[in-house]
Image (cartoon, rainbow, N blue to C red; front, side):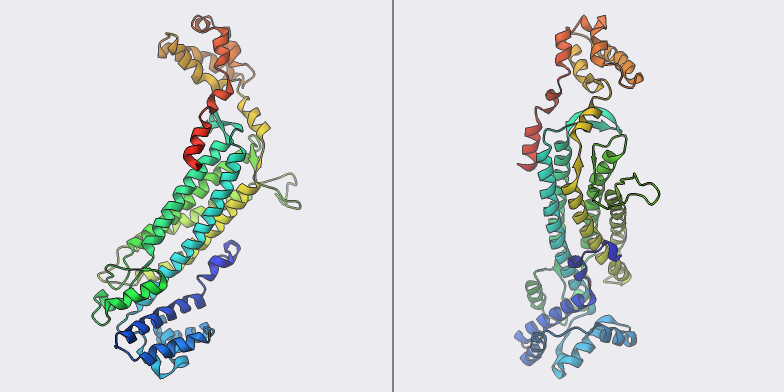
Amino acid sequence: MVPRYARPEMSALWEPEAKFRIWFEIEAHATQKLADLGVVPETAAKALWDWWATNPTIDVEAIDAIEAVTKHDVIAFLTWVAEQVGEEARFMHQGMTSSDVLDTTLSVQLARASDVLLTDLDALLAAIKTRAEEHRYTPTIGRSHGIHAEPVTFGLKLAQAYAEFDRCRERLVAARAEIATCAVSGAVGTFANIDPSVEDYVAEQLGLTPEPISTQVIPRDRHAMYFATLAVIAGSIERLAVEIRHLQRTEVLEAEEYFSPGQKGSSAMPHKRNPVLTENLTGQARMIRAYALPALENVALWHERDISHSSVERYIGPDATIALDFSLVRLTGVVEKLVVYPERMMANLDAMGGLVHSQRVLLALTQAGVTREDAYRLVQRNAMKVWDSSGALQLLDLLKADADVTAALSHTELEEKFDLAYHFKHVDTIFARVVG
């Protein structure tokens, strides 16, 4: 992963030494259970744990040097451990196959990565909730197709994001549960040379669930679901990032990223304040979504196993989780420091001469006995005059001057239809649904 977009806590989970430590724990726990079953001497397990108790540093370079000869990473690791532990190490890996170590380790790493991401999501949800409550009743214009539609509040915009990320959290919890499985079933997954109770024991020690049936590898539909979940979360990140980017456009400028003292926006134009953080989040989301496709393609492995998935997962495991961790933390910072301009929101809302109230007039005319087709025509013909004047004319004034309209609605009734507060009468109901 590019260091620029990596945070230490998540990156540490994918360091070679961290991986080798998980490998050792799997091997040592399996040896311990085999000793309990009388398959290997108790002294074998004790020798491993006694060595481990000294908290040795894993010599990654030495293991890599052995692998350069063996061309097999698990054998290289076992050889190095045997050199450290001594003769008793020969009882390691009894009845196991490399995938037992590799797949179970990946499950541990992805589960631990999920815990970091869930913490990130909790922080983001808290930030969004705080800002949503702050702007619960801040009026702004709702847009469909990028065009003014009807009034909303900025708090509702943020409440929608809260609900979306709350769903993301639920999905990630489910994805974590699905990925956190353990396979210690030996060649082609039959347990021919290792008792299933060993798998149960290793799973319990590592906080995993035994894989019901592993063909020699953990089925990759689990991984596909996991990385697809990360991709969906990335999509939600981009949705909020794009919203902020649009709101920061000069002609809109209803909200903008915090611009810190000394920050520069352009090497050429000193006036620029660009939405660089949310633009970066859009780029990050593209990458995270891209990692879902190879995970889906990994599902169709040959027979009981092949290793076409292996190189893929060496990329996407670290990169997707590191990128998503970075993105969630960055978005949290954007939300916490987002600069909001309520006055500009109101000015934009009023910019088109009251067109945003057209539906209320339409409905009132139908309730006053005008057919819907005629009501639509009457409102639209006045609204288009306002549109063509770029908001210089006022819809209410034109409607009051339209005899066909006033034949059905009085001036007072028309004025009542331009009450902004009408649109916000259910804001509390929506908030109660979303945040309680």
